[in-house]
Image (cartoon, rainbow, N blue to C red; front, side, top):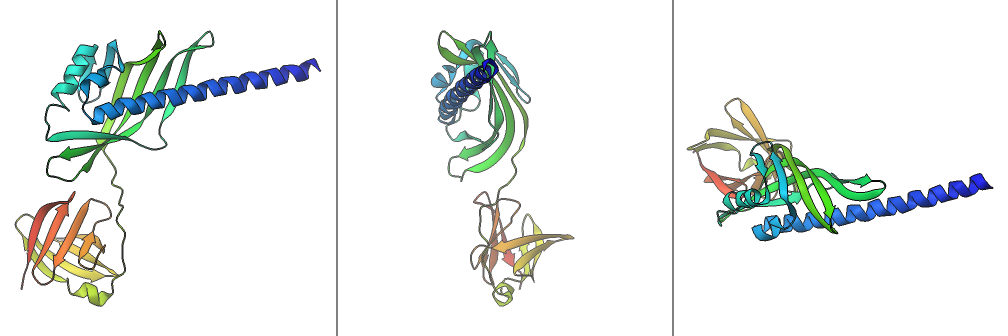
Length: 251
């Protein structure tokens, strides 16, 4: 009977700790969301309120920044200095992990790790996906207030492209009217061919598959590129929604 009661007691204790850790995770992810909201709006004063005075920031491209004044200055000077250029940060779903830090069973801090992507916003241009990185943040609880003490930002690289466009079905006859030769000032000579319900762009020895989104609009599944045909006249290439090249049909 004593053993049975002990097992019940341990089960209750474990459940209690699990609840505590779950609440901690919710608290840290909520604070993280508030911080990045201020980042996306370039509210440097609010951004600074999430850090300790002796914060340490380590970046694999930008080096080390020590202390809150220096960090806020870096935010103001770099990402928030140009009103025509902004970064928007977005978390990668499913990558967040919160680890409790305890002493004598009492939580004094937490480590948050995960991945995030960044989008570039420039005046007059559509938003475009730019980069992917990992992060690790050490949050400390001091006098009932959570703040970031150490920040690691690393493994920066290009973000993998995720195609969201939908392919439609076009007959080979409908596709054939776009086949032919085109010429652009940057790309040079391009030959468009029909193959298995889509088109192929042949540039020199290289071939690129493009797929119909609309009757005269095609897209690349691996990059944010679209190709708009004006029948018998030209081919307009857009990257991130902006015109990158206009090719003229060669008669």
